[in-house]
Structures are given as structure tokens and as C-alpha cells.
Image (cartoon, rainbow, N blue to C red):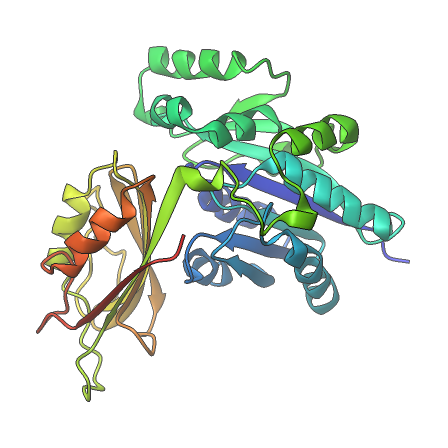
Length: 365
């Protein structure tokens, strides 16, 4: 009989570096070790999942445009079951959206494990990633960010290399003010040793009574999940943007990367928390550090954009994709989505190389 599949939950606020942590874990694992990823993303485009499938993940399931610990929680069991039966993984990693409440998700994984008599799943651990550089800003405004740091088995401090030691100590002090007693570690540019991340034997999973009480305090009643809005979901709003070729034009044109670069440079991190996109381009885009040498191939390519708090990277994922020339998800601060939708619709921020293209902007959360 096969042992239960260990599940690791990776959580953290928007732009903290969860996907980078996972991608840096994969090369450390044996070649025959199978990792399946259950990915919860804002918006209606599985952008990070496209990146994950190009980086030796054995299988991916996406739960889009909703919160994995609230209105999508009923789909969790089916998604895990599909991964377990189709992939037969050695481990399943659940990467949550930036708004997910980890304690509730841990409780649901525990419930599913008990339903199988402990034969299918076991919660190995919850890992919370903290963006040291930007923690002071979102910790002041986000209840969820605090709960992600408080209810976990391990805290990973990320992006600490970008700040002074004093600022790191201030961040750590603010985290300790949450009265937590879990291990804490600094990543090395988003990398943590596999021996630290895996095999945590989750202490959080054993605090069932505390988690259930917390669930009740925050209105996470799964039997009525569609009848009320959850406070942690209302902390952000989400825009979905598509840029298509003109009607009747079937040739790949590509996004104007110079215009895109200007948009990214001027995007205020007080209003915009996260920008992700998959797009086609005929010339290489420029990341925020300006380093492109040897990074991209020439000609028409498809790229993934990952923007967070004023920094951004591009990943070349191959030949141009069919359909829209650009599919973008923008996560804004509360009450900012409508204003930014109007700014984008007004034109000039995003366009194709030869014309404006057909632009569609809609608020999805």
C-alpha cells in the first residue's frame, strides 16, 4: 500500500516570492521525485502555472478567480484527487493566492486526510513567505498578511538582501509582535534548502481546536461560503486585461515592449500590488534590472511578466501562443480597480507594435 501523499502549503502576501521559492526547490530534488502543484491564482488566466509547467513540475491543477480557502474550498478535494490519481506524485505543493487564509486551508486538508482514514494525504507543513522589503507597508493594512505570518510552521524572510540590516530587524520585530513561536529563516535570493522546507511534521496541523475557533471568528463557514463576503478577500481588487489583434489579422504582431516598459516603470506600488501577464513580442522585453544579455532568443517569442512592488522579470517560455497577444492580471489596492480600468481603457498604456489593437478590461474580483 502506498503511503499518504505529503502536502506542503506555501502561502504569503502578494509578491512575496512564493513561486520563486518553489522553482528554486525543484532542482534540489532527485530526478525521479515527482512534484505536483495545486495553484490558486487571482484573475482568470493561469499565468504562473504556465511558468511552473516549464520547470519540471510533474502536473499542475489551477483554481482561478477565487479564494482557495473560501469560495473555491469545495473544489480542493477534487483537485487533489485528480493530481494524486493522474500524477501519482511524491509530494503535492499547494501555492495559495496572496489573499488566502492558511489556517482555514490547513484545516480543510486535515479534514480530507481524515476522510480517507489517513491513507490519501498528510499535511507536512505550512510555509509563509514574507517580503522583508515591503512588509512594513502591507502589514499595516492587511489583516491577512498578519494571519499568514502567525499561523504557519515556518517563516521564510525573502528579499532581505535589498534592505539594511536595521530594516530587516524591524521587520522581524514586527513579526514577533504577533506572538509566534515557529522557526524563521532567510532565503538566499528566494532559495531555501529542501531539508528545511520539507518534512516539517506540521505542528499547525495538530492545533485543530485552535484553527476551528479561528475559522468561526472570521466567518469561514463553508456551508454558507457564497452568502457573505470575507474580509480578507476585500483587501484587494483584480482586473483582467486582454489585448488582441485587429479583426481579420491572423499574423502574430506582438506587444509594444517600449510602451509596456513605460507602464511598468510608472506603475505606483501604492495602488498596484501585482501585475502578471503572458504575452507575445517580436523583440526582447527589458527587466527592471536592465540585464538581458544571453537571456532571450531573437524573434517572435512568448513571455511571462512578473511585476511586484516596482520590480519585474520576464521569462521566455517559447514560441508565440495562440489567441490574445497579451493576457494580464492586475491586483490593485481596495477601491482602485475601477480607476485603473478607466486609465487603461483610455489607451496609451498597453498597445501592439503597429496599432492599438483591441483592448478589453474587466473587473473580476
